[in-house]
Length: 466
Image: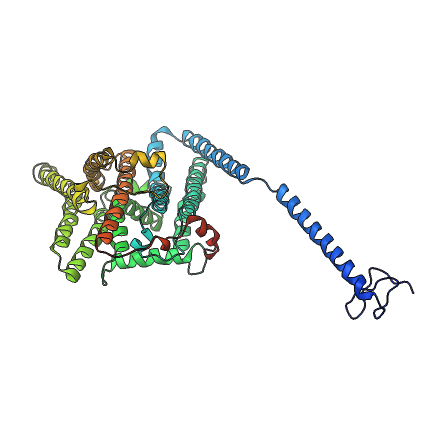
């Protein structure tokens, strides 16, 4: 009886025409037919795979498309923001821009610091230095690519919110405009403390744990503890602006001009400004005292003295708004100048001789695979002269930012704060190199095999869920 090729017997074996299940030659027939069928299926699968791969755009095309979209987005934000500002009354324009800048410049500076940290991680990954061991981090830490991915999203989200704020306010939607920075701040806080395993939970936990150890130095101080604390001192102005912004949000003063009264609770004469500015320096001071308790090294006391010199700079400047003009001119202003001079020179001296140990002009960051630009920097003395000179200048200008009575021009303050972050950025390389030299001299063997290759990290990037 004729049997269909497409039918299957209850036993699961195929039914072939002219051959019964128990007939001689059945096994021979199957031995020829099954390989042919499987071969056809495999060939079909391979062809489908190649076809799908051919239909997918190349990585270069995707990258160019993303860059194009980024520039289109950037130009659109600039155009919309500019048109929105030009719609406003010229008398209120500067005041409104000052307010908008207050809410968004802290997050813009944080975004800049995240970009710079990504650059640091990239340089670390190319060098001979085991930064994984120095910072005591696990093998699942974020790579520079993942850091840059985060900074890219920050670069998109923060200016977009600022553009929406300008547009809505200039078109009369004041309540909607006021909600933009509030939503942005709340979203940032929620993402940072989100307890579930998304958005790099292990890295966020490490960061928050380090912040807790900095604020409450009840345990021995590790390198990541004081390393991050030093970076936070360069971001003291960011903390101050975040406090001003949060104050106005809590008192419903966003997108209003009520807070321009200098003596109001959120005004420019508030005592909260110097209190917030001094917090990172107090944290670092307490760390030094804790280190002295643990090690009994007198060097840590001199380091604590360095951070204490920032305290009079901050509070003497704030006194301008709380004392008589003559008393400020003839008493407190000269004291402020002296304290600023001492703080700048003391900090500069400590950077060069202690944090960096440039007295011997060590060779910074020998690369695994030298290139023309690494040869331009590696072992060249001009790099050290540049770092020393720029560090001295920027240490002096940093006093401008710490002084509340000089913070009238917000663009100037923003520029100086950005320059301070660049100073801290170059400080990181020499500080990490100096720490590596100390570890090497101590005889501790840190195998380079413990440092994961960046390509291996990409393969294992599934450990971070987004």
